[in-house]
Image 1 (tube, one colour):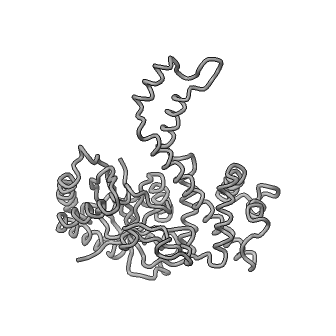
Image 2: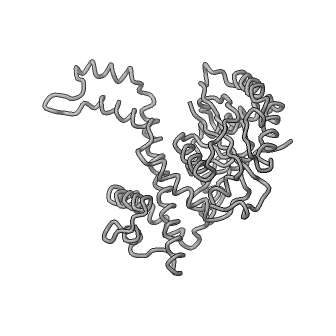
Image 3: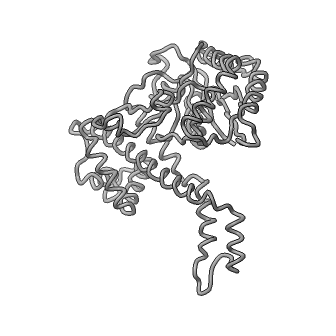
Length: 376
């Protein structure tokens, strides 16, 4: 049987409920980490989970920090301890980098980097090498900070999960208040409603910053293989990737396949893995058909015309059979529903696109890529 390995982007920590849903299709889900694991930790003390232990989800750090790891982790600790001031500096640093500003003064990105690193900008080589290393260091900081914020929001969401909107509205009625209390006091229940609403919305600009930082990290070193299927749960991230492709190719992405997935699989790792394996066993025929047909499509030679019907003529049948099995194993009434939208990017592999290589520099047989967005 043909296996399917996929790369998740641009988040560097896999949300477990989404990971469980995505893994119904690929055999493995790979993702990047800004910092390699501490090799001094034993297997008993290292943070891991069943999916990582079985190799079903695999983390990679394309460019290792090596001797600078301890200093980087010290900076992350400093960010945690002095969150407001350093987060503000890091935000300014990121914005300066994204807009490619080269201003003098305190908002110059080298000056901010030196401030964050106590005057020690990594890299002792020439200006170009030093600039590249500083950009990579900054990318790690952006991704690590995003991980911290994600974790805090996940913990807050968990604390609020037992309080639904109806209960909060009832509390408001009992308090006899709407937006504010007497003497201008803030209504805590209205504030909780605002917090809950904000938790479901990405922070402005955060996905773009993370995407660009992830791109720098991805291009800094090699990965075990050239993944032709990239997956994400962030629509803005998928749009950024496709926009990058469209700018390069002067053509649009092509919809290949639309599959149902559960909206959530909130289970302990052992139960979640058992459910995934059970589904893959029951869906073996249709799942293998999908994998083999997708693999054959991305291995095609250069395409002058891209017709999704010609590329995958039985897409409707495959989707119907897959969706029936998803409903059988994960009933919508209990698990909800979301879509896995597979978009075909012709005439360039995703690795080539992100390393800005020309067609002549393509080092493998892959000529095309597929981006899969998990969405409502």
